[in-house]
Image 1 (cartoon, rainbow, N blue to C red):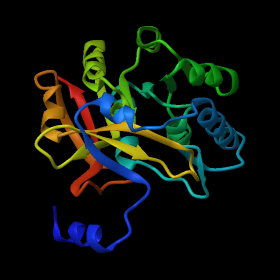
Image 2 (cartoon, rainbow, N blue to C red):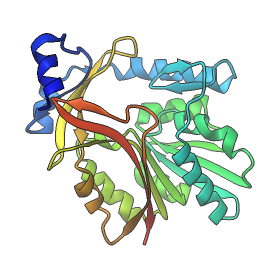
Image 3 (cartoon, rainbow, N blue to C red):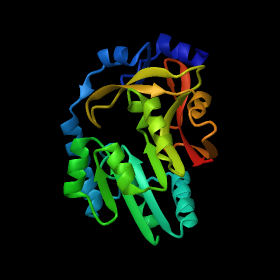
Image 4 (cartoon, rainbow, N blue to C red):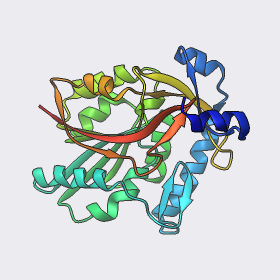
Length: 262
């Protein structure tokens, strides 16, 4: 623990929101988490993205609206590269893509492509809402992983701010690999300067929504070890939000990784 953190603990006010830990298991973190009202979160995300869709707002993240767009330029550059390599065709499988946050964020820069197909695989309630209110000739929603992979025929998988919130992230990464995507892009993924992966809890500001839930923080080298011999890293970048912070005095940060199949 560094001196700054020690002084803050001794004399400063402790933060009420953010990341706290660590826990020996996912179950231990769940036991001290309040969870969230999934339907309430969904309704807030839907209301915000409808404003984006209808041109009443420009950008949404975690149901919060912003008056200026925020871009992950490395992600956008990677998508443009994939499209260029495929004659102007970009077929995305957006794992855990909510109701289209990343799609709406980047669509203006992808509008000139020959063919854009953006496919989101999500929980059943999100997928149903997406099909009802947001589906188009470009944007599609699935609630089943196998069906999504088969139907999308995607040349790139995006996992943005999602893999760290799964109880079994390494099993899902194995599914990513077995699906044979040419490119896999992780964005806004949580890493920590520790010798091994860690489990913490995240307390969300009530102004966003009331929620406390478990989260993984990955050791970077061990995370990439899951893809060794099958994918190579062709790009790395800091996330466009929350690129560094501390969890119980240990430095961490959100990063992005662009992987290409060997």
